[in-house]
Image (cartoon, rainbow, N blue to C red):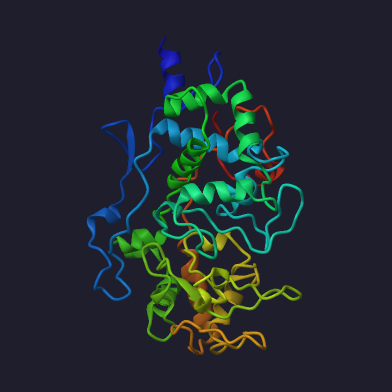
Length: 386
């Protein structure tokens, strides 16, 4: 009985199949109602309101949490399972690989049927804090974000009917959904909730920068501190859009980044009716774990952090294509950073890396399908559980 209880608590499989974890992920506290609440040292600090670009000790914005351990663990299985794609060839994790900062290392992501997309896969670290999702900010909730790629023909190419039929016919998923939602029939909204629960648990707030921010100044090197000072300076003005502690202000910004050679101009958020003033505008991405997610920008235009940083120093609108009259964000100007300052900023960005809460990749999946090859090839997890 003792071994069985331990297996249930850890979420390991038993003779009856799969069981979901009854424990919250690290950094989450189990509270009344069987809900997981995020606990962070940033909770001790005040908000950013009326504080300019914010200091090192400023509060986090509102977050998505309060999901049950079972919902989070079910979402973990679903996230890695190719059963969610129309041809059972691609998982959410195919484009959001843990070993690549929950991106995929590609300039343009690839769909389940081999189609080349028109944008890169953004990182999912700290996505539970974000108010706008996708590069063009088209989605307001993680639930919407979870379903759109799954049902898009050029991405996972599934349909609601096929997805639900595959899950309901599976030997394990109906029981797992009962554990997570106390339901007899799987619904599309529950799939979205489970994926949202898991993605909200992807928290990265324990980097060397965070140690510095909380008072341990030896956590950063002299070069990194110089880079942080340039980053926050009125000359570079990086922090005005990439605002600590999330290192994004969650806004849509038109910066005039160039497209890769041969690619047509991407209107971004400006393609949405009523948003024409944001033509060429994209969501300001978080810089957390940015050293892991090359290449950079919405289309992977820049291969290195140095190239991406230099772009901002080459003059306002220098890369805007002929015929485009974009309303560039007022923070985009000509800081004329030196090569040394570019290196200092790049060094500082490396201090934002933190994978201490990297979730465990399942050894096997409820569907019986194999993990996507890119996950098993690039995995950096130290062991995996069911």
